[in-house]
Length: 340
Image 1 (cartoon, rainbow, N blue to C red):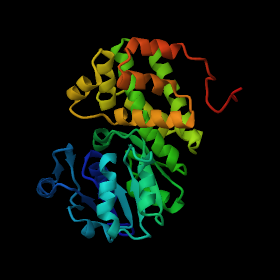
Image 2 (cartoon, rainbow, N blue to C red):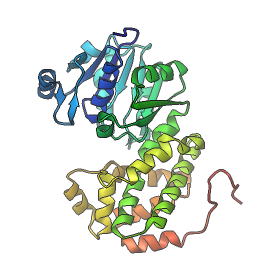
Image 3 (cartoon, rainbow, N blue to C red):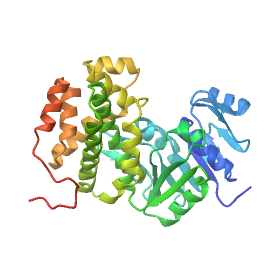
Image 4 (cartoon, helix red, strand yellow):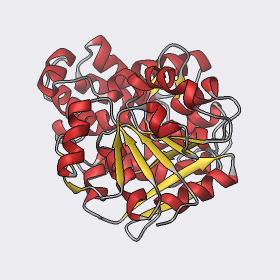
């Protein structure tokens, strides 16, 4: 066994479980923290996370824990893989066990509404002295669990953190690419959920492949336009965390955000769409936050404007589609042709 790194993954959902299992298979000591003690005990006995990844057998060396003190104190890398809505609450619980030397990494894709904070920025608020990184990309957990070839991005200003995360996660089916743009990498993961709603909408309305390709590329333009205005590198959006994540989210009918858009395209209201889904899709909340931020910064985002009118103001889907096509024509590729 390889003992130069000690890893803790916080969050026993699908992606957290899959990542922790990869670390164990790579020969590093690793603990997986769960909130649910009954599920944790079941996983210890069966070596399977029946709730989130029932088809994945857990490595014998993967330690399942429910005590923060036991798993965080001795780790040199702590990976937070919890939903964005629970992120701050987890940080409150773990803050007394983190030391300044630990590498802190987030995989969560979302925005905290109060101050438009990404999860890496929340980590910076709580742990301003620690190196911080972001893992993001087109990473459907069930496919990673099935060992289907997958690429992801580790983004950080700290080279040592990037190298360490590559060492503990990279294997023959999970490729880990480095980036020094954590903000753009994480923002791409949050913004793409909005455009999955648009993808589902276009499918329900019977729009063709030409429309789908235009929708994807204009979505990418909008994402990068806002992100660059907020300090991200536009080239980040040509990689896995940008166009890669956008494609997998917008092309999957299993995506919660896609399914909300599909229901809206069938003429259903937002409440009905959410009731069918059983939970609020991340993109619905992100849409409202991004609309407000774009208006504040005066960033042109016609797809966001149209989706907001549909989702929150009840505008008819066909009317929204027509208004988008009537917008002023802009340059094709952002940041290549200067605007007059």
